[in-house]
Length: 293
Ligand code: SIN
Image 1 (cartoon, helix red, strand yellow):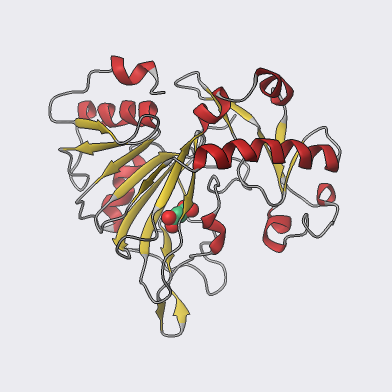
Image 2 (cartoon, helix red, strand yellow):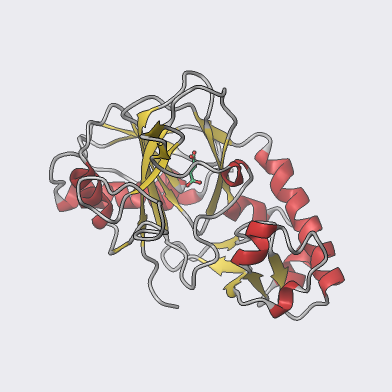
């Protein structure tokens, strides 16, 4: 199922790109992300990201600033969601772009966010006007052999949809209502269409690869434009069956400290797997702004 680009591409010497499954993700060896990258090396990483949607770099030792410097090669960064609000996020190295994912308590306060919401397939920040085009996750402390993160190739999900279903969703948008997602209002029967939300194209054409991907964002609090609530729920149920089916065999990263994973947040969905109560899990995330549509 690998895309033709993968076979055709020649990467410069020293950048070793090893696919991790037939369909998604590659490990990049031979690159220290803590050092400034030449344009040739960065170009190879960028091409590999387009080809594989998810890149894994092992054994990195990055400060917050180094992680931000690498992420910025992909474009301007979005600040961490929720920065500056409430008891909320810990600021790392004075950089507001790092979102801390953590279940660790310090001084009676959670040092990051680590909700169960991450355990279902989703795209990060789908309820913002322009969800980031790429996200980076860097592991500091992770439980052994659990708490993996799975990634799902949404080009493939789209390409395997029956033609009639592809036609049915072409040109439609999907609307996300953060409030409904958070409070389960849709499931509780509230009229989600009346709540403020943002719309994203349901089928996204990647500006660089020209390939189409299904963009669902998240299930709860979402609805498809131009349909009644019932029609929208029926259509989303059908689309999500495809996601769940393909997701069963998708590639998951079994985290090791020092892993950095970079993914295309428009063409890949991800989810975290469960881990034992009492295990510590701390990762840093950056999010690269999408270009305005
Ligand atoms: C995320 O959803 O961005 C985080 C996933 C994870 O913690 O594995």
